Image (cartoon, rainbow, N blue to C red; front, side, top):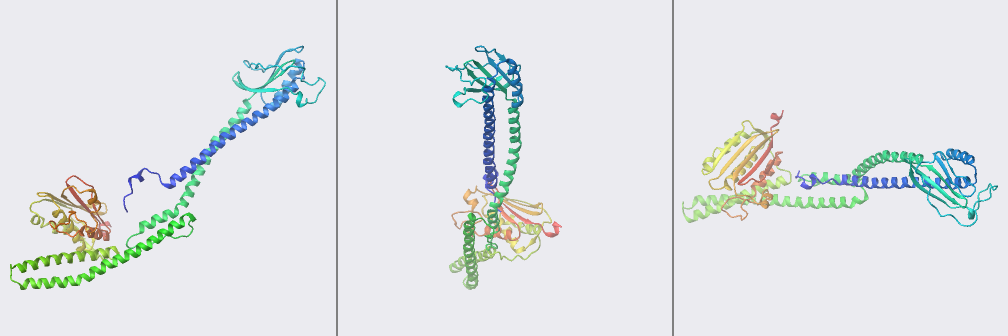
Length: 480
């Protein structure tokens, strides 16, 4: 599986973003609703209290004596359900009055006195005055004696009267409502977040199916398709296009694999015949003659073509998932010792160091594994620096065998490193013959490693160093 992009290490997933966005929008709506409803409820309570104050002031204005006013204040206390105080500023023949509950520091506002005759109904009239006779009541909110009061004031030709009602009861009710919001909104947000997470997961399930199918798309899995059952309408077209793309890819891949394999197979026999004829001619001509040298060069080219055809045939089998691996227990330590025995003779100018842990066994095809190791060692020699060095290390790592081949080299560019395992890609981009090679060795070596359940990779760049790491699973006997 390829490495995930670096952005995904910090970027939140689409599902998480959808859940967070839904929760944020719902949270904003709930908070806005809570603030608005809180304000509307409080304003409604204050408005209802203002209506009561207006009615109570009109009734209080009909009472003349302090005793009548005291009795009325007690009555108002029970009606309002809160501390209620009354004050009358004397005018004419009416004495001033202030109830005991009037808060200290609560001063009546100076209001303009209406001109003309009295707007109050006669003393003996017990009914409500008409709309044209009703005096104007001015309500306002003030702070006094550590409490908030709603003050209703009316100015009459014969005096000024005010009733103050404590808002403590209303504030207590509003606090209960506020506490309810504070408790319920977080709970609702948790429920909404959980619901959004579940719904987004269900909505993205087809995308997860697409991802799973993409992961299974290999040479053996191009027949994978995403089912359209229980899929949202918005994703049907996407899945249909993806399935159609897989179908085209499967056809193209099968055609390419068949062409590569058929071409390699058809070329194999003519090249073998040509090589045999050239060898026969080489033996029949005069030794050391120019003709023999020319035939020798042709024979080298035919051998090179035969090697390319053989590798292409193996790669076509690997592409089709049909590479046959004759599994047997292979002593990888002994195979490495055998391969490195002649390194000093093959590259006497190099400083060679080997560290091979004994007893490393794997299950695989000895000939194919030998080809992989030969390719790595030959590349380390061919692409080394003059008077350079070569390091080979083989050891256990958990349940795998790690074979690391390093050599001194010029620094490989990013493009070369990215395409190092591509077919016909060589360490020498010019493809000249100074360094022999076909550019198929590493691609085939990685295909063989993967056919054995392992991996071949180029390790991160180090100055003056090129390192390949071959990882193979340990033999079953060792795992047990």
